[in-house]
Length: 170
Image (cartoon, rainbow, N blue to C red; front, side, top):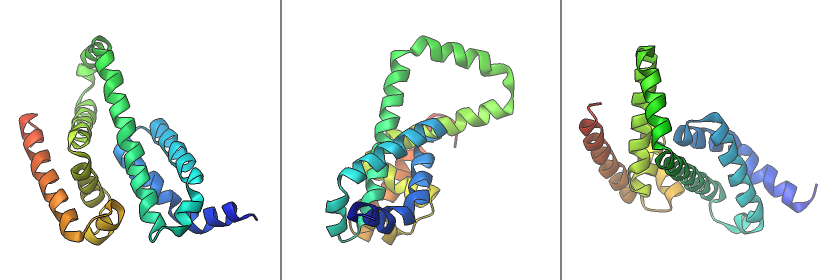
């Protein structure tokens, strides 16, 4: 086993399922999540030697996961803006499908609202409210103090509440 494989086994392998969990919670689409994971692993592989010297490489890797996931959300939003007519046709066709569709649309709206938050606030909300991470873990992943992590979460939650109220979801 060469050094790169050893580093992969020691640093990445233990958190690979957590990486996919974080990405999936943000991106929501399984195919997009798999793509984001592959992009993340490619970035991590290129930085593997540097990661070995990092004081907390796993938190750094999770930060890369967050960044790549938000990039995927922005790309998806950009594609939707470029095809507004198709989206309205799909929405019109799904109107008669019942509660499951309404729930999916509500979850999609919540997810988009989280994606619209400033990046640090969105990360804190996802890590705390969705992933259930403690503030100390959030602080490590985001590279800030625990107090700052709490502040990002608090501000993000308040902004999310405003947005969801405007959409009639709260």
